[in-house]
Figure 1 (cartoon, one colour):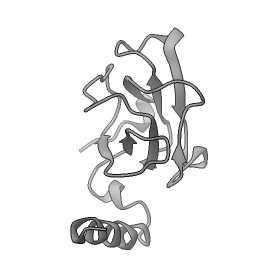
Figure 2: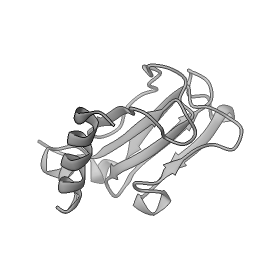
Figure 3: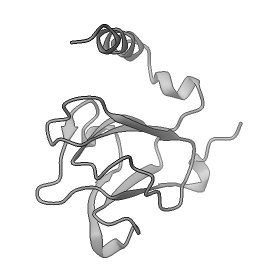
Length: 126
């Protein structure tokens, strides 16, 4: 394992000991996308505040995700295609109980896009 990966892993674990480290920086949701179903290799991090439109700016079709954090009132929907069509939904994160820090992979589909929706009452104000 390279020094950079070990350093990043150590820093990540140190941050986990603090309650919701991303919230301190104004981040309401954060997850990593992986090309393999085992979440091997380097993840492609996606994070932000509040709702998004359809995002298809993935480096490649993702086969799995690992959730870092999600604020109450927010949800992430993953889609098989790049247009966030509801008929192509392949996964959803509603809260941390749906797999924080656990590799999650769809049974037969891959992720081509995602969309985040946060309730108006839970939108972060800066």
